[in-house]
Structures are given as C-alpha cells and as structure tokens.
Image (cartoon, rainbow, N blue to C red; front, side):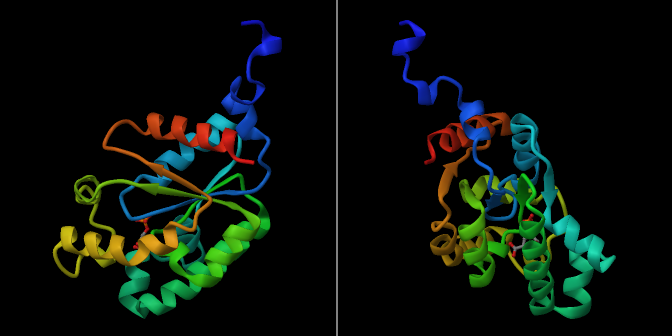
Amino acid sequence: MSNAHRPHDMSDPVRQARRIARPLVLVGLMGVGKTSIGRRLASALDRDFIDADEEIERAADRTVAEIFEAHGEAYFRDGERRVIARLMEEGHGVIATGGGAFVDPETRALVLDQGLAIWLDCDIETLVERTSRKNTRPLLKTGDPHAILRDLKEQRSPAYAQAQIHVVTGDGPHEVAVERIIEELAAWQ
Ligand code: S3P
C-alpha cells in the first residue's frame, strides 16, 4: 500500500499521541504500576514525569506512611488534593497519582477537565503480589492485603471508570502497557 492510501491516523502512534498537550494523569489502584509505567510513557513521548506521592513527601518532608501515622488519612488527602492541583497548574507531561487521588471529587473534576486520565487496571492477584514487595503503604497494613485491595477495587472502580482512557494490564512487562496506552492516546480525539 502506498503512503497515500495508508490510514494516516494509525501510521505512527507515538507521533499521534504526542499531539495531546494536556497532562496525562495515571490513576488506578496501588501496585498497578502507575509510577514505573508513567516514567516509561513520559520517556516514550518525550515529556516530563512527576509522581504526586513523591511531591507530597517532598512538601511535607515526611514519607506517606509517616503522614498517615502522625496526622491520619484525612490530612493526607488534603495535602494530596493541593499537591495535585499544583501539578496540574504547572502543566507536567505525565503525572502518576496515588491510588486514592482520583476518588476525590475535586481532584477528579480537575483532572478530567484539564488533563487526560488514564485508568490502569489489573487483576487483584497481580496487585497483591506487587504490593507485597514493599512495606510502604499504610492502607495495606491494617488487614489482609488481598481483601483490602478487593474492597478498594469495588469501591473505587466507579470513580476510576470516569477516566477518559482505560487500559487493562497484566503481570507482564510494563513496556506492553506503555504500548497499549500510546495506541489509545493515538486514537483519542
Ligand atoms: C493510596 C495509594 C498510595 C499512597 C497512599 C494511599 C491509596 O499510592 O498515595 O498510600 O489510597 O490507594 P500508590 O497508589 O502509588 O501506591
């Protein structure tokens, strides 16, 4: 097929995806890979990457676990909302959020209005396996991680489902997820 007849839209997904100027905001449960996939996505699209939890830790000069411990979840959520509003305002290329961020109605409305939300979704067994490698997540320390993640998935899926893009990933390499996201972005109008 000559170039003239090749469907233009799919000829170069990376180039098509790069047309999107809005911040790309990764949402989804703990352990789904928002940070590592986000980093790779940013590099593939030649954009900057920022991790909201790291920014919260920097602003508070404490880890997420320490903030939960010292002040509780509601205080953490206030800081999270403010930090994400600032990151959106600064117009970063790719933003990874903590798993609860997009559940907040204010944050969700802001991201949907000014950014492009990408819901990374995968099965609970993979999330349990991945989150078990680190001991940094306060919400998983209060009981059985499998049950907690299953309940969070049920509670949060209606919020996550409002994201403009939904990508189901497996337990395979993050590169595959990045390719799938880029294809979705390329097709996004
Ligand atoms: C949380 C997810 C964590 C972190 C905090 C709360 C959540 O981020 O923000 O522990 O409510 O799901 P990750 O999704 O990056 O683990």
